[in-house]
Length: 283
Image (cartoon, rainbow, N blue to C red):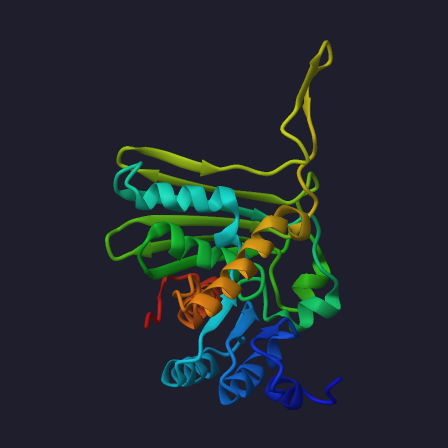
């Protein structure tokens, strides 16, 4: 057992590093892994400070060490089928993306204090999904939000209910709506509308059985939260990471994806404060 991260990361029997610690430790641990020439799997977000992320991205790219960022929703079978259908031209040119992302209940105040806020914490996944489904970088963000769920969140300077609109260079639009409270379960839907049709990824339930009778039709409730909803996605993203490291194939999510999602989060935060659209710092 190692007494500190540096000795654990540098140990000769360690082939790769998985980082699932608190966000403020991510970049320091990545730096240690780069120095040890060990591939990295890092949970999102890379950090809460875009300047520090840019410095780390430069170091990663100069080193050539593979770094994967855990945007697990890209590996959800339904979301990926939508993405692949878009890329295969099933719906023509993408014109609109709509993402619904609502948690069953807000986290506690202790978590909110260190989370970096709803745009950098909860919506970071949705910003990555938006880029992935649009197929191009958003260049402008308009965001607004309220505190409708928990007044303690407002006291901490955060929001719990938000709407975001992204615009790309081609004019394609993405709308993201989020809430910290969906009393009916973990609400995760994505829709891509194109010139020739639409693709949609629906919510997951324990079963797909519908029960009909004189009192109406009933279904199982939505899966409760992300461990259940994205169970397969977590497994598939880890399988991909291991396979890519062993085979040398390209990683499907990299440090640049982590950087771009954080840039969108920062722009959304600024927009929510100013009430104005904000240009995105795209690199």
